[in-house]
Length: 271
Image (cartoon, rainbow, N blue to C red):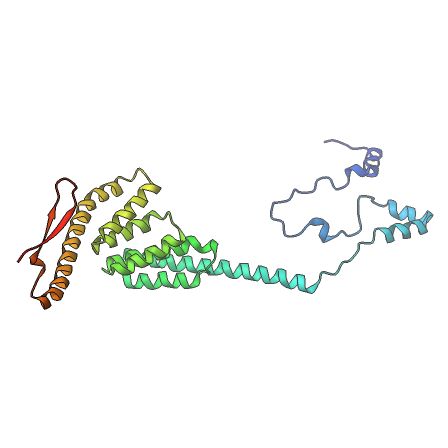
């Protein structure tokens, strides 16, 4: 046991540097400044102020007046604006939380194969989520998820529309590109599907799946181009024959002859 002499204790109490020692540190969750909360009048000066008041009361009054804190009234308009901003931010956060809950519920329904019900939850999330940059991620996800629901339901045009909206919010959203490309392929839009796969390779050059899909779709795209060309020629022939029939002729009376030297064609008429 350490015994502290009375004289030493009095000497220590008289030393202002020891005032306030032993206070706990801040826990990191600050709701107001300690200085803003004020004090009860027992500052670092201890009881010195009372002794000085007996000898120099006018000086004490002067110091008290000088130390009197100034009160500045906060304009009501400024306070109202700050409160409005706080309320707006809280409303946005609540809306984002509600949107995320609807998205999670939609995911559960999708896993259970309830695509129509999942569509409704994703739509609810889109309606609740505020149209602002901070909600761009959840909105793009919900559009893409609606796209895959429509894909499962065989509504490929709707898939393309939803995935396009998702990509407008997030141009590097690979899943949306994959789903839109699949919908294009189902509709035999081979050129558009290839374009989506090439975009995926720009984002992720290591995507073997996109590369394989391009190789698989290119012959189909070439075949479709040839088929469309033949159909177009037939349409022109029909139109030409309908006009020439008035003069007792048809396109069969005209023959295209290729010049082997120049590679150009000349048209000859035959009866």
